[in-house]
Image (cartoon, rainbow, N blue to C red):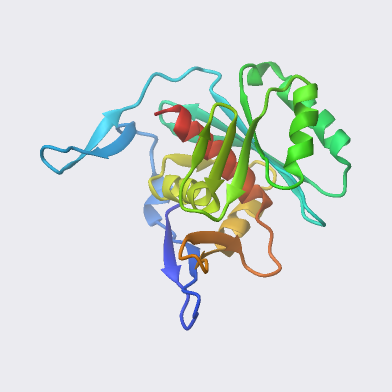
Length: 237
């Protein structure tokens, strides 16, 4: 389903909203193969070119875990990278559970045979730091992403600091390019679509762009998905 980002009228913060646009062609869209890869600008000609995608493992899975703060939800999103793009086959969320119980549930999920070798990426901001240690103690080898309001991603290996703008943009751009597909019949698919519609782009006092859910809305599923998509795209470079 195509989307577009529009400016919110009469908003002094220059907010922008995500809007879904119905495409009649979706009714009859086929799964015909499209060239896959990453776009880059050729230095000699200045033209945009397509760099072929690298071969993909059958078990190329990325699991994003957004941890709850206060009364929010903890959410999990699984992304599978295939030769035709990224697919979201699983979403889950929970609320009000102690972190040791959440770690046990994540360990049970990661033990599934189809997720052998999957990368677990967690929000390492705030409450994520002690949970990161619990996940390591459970031999889950998580990757920590501290979400910032800055302008540049830093870090390497298993610890990163990434602007929220970069994480959310990874999802929005993949949806726009139709390289990210959300399985239509999975639980919480409608909740995810609503969260995407509730996201707003804003400018921070430091002049950096960031994203946030509108007041009273949630963004846990979006952020869990964003963690998985960002890492999947990074791993493909």
